[in-house]
Length: 174
Image 1 (spheres, helix red, strand yellow):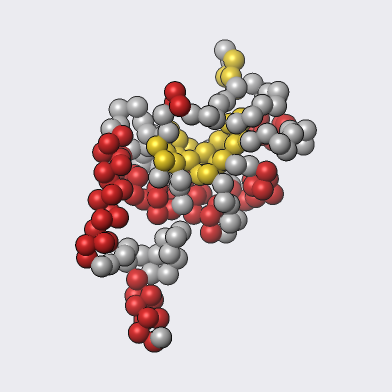
Image 2: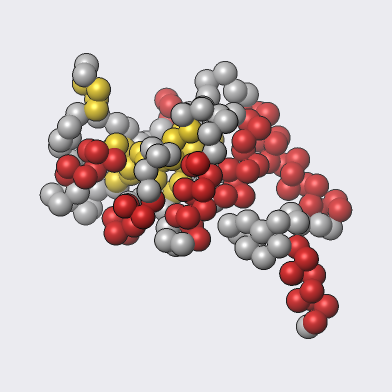
């Protein structure tokens, strides 16, 4: 999992004093809102690295045809207790086979990091009051637990869709 710091982020949005620019001119590493993308996708040059910020209220299927053109999909967590973006990430990876970066943005807390990784997120932009070292530690703690006990997660996830009991049965049958 990569943790994004604003000052080192290659991806940028275009805004003016009124908010996002409705029809931005093409540029590399453009991070567009869904509305901006829908306004310019037919004329946007394919050679520019492009990303879309997808609200957690949007249906991922509406973006499915555009996924081959996108290098980043940023999924919004407007509140840390609203988990719809977890499902969006899972659908992007499992159903639509999206291979680009999936980034968590918004109210992203350290406690969410292990589940973000299991649902298919590659990167997270933590809320400004969150500790980056704690986020890294949260990942190593859960990964390390599996190494010490010899047990993987008991549920399936994006990387290993079969639950632990199925993997155990299959290994015994082999």
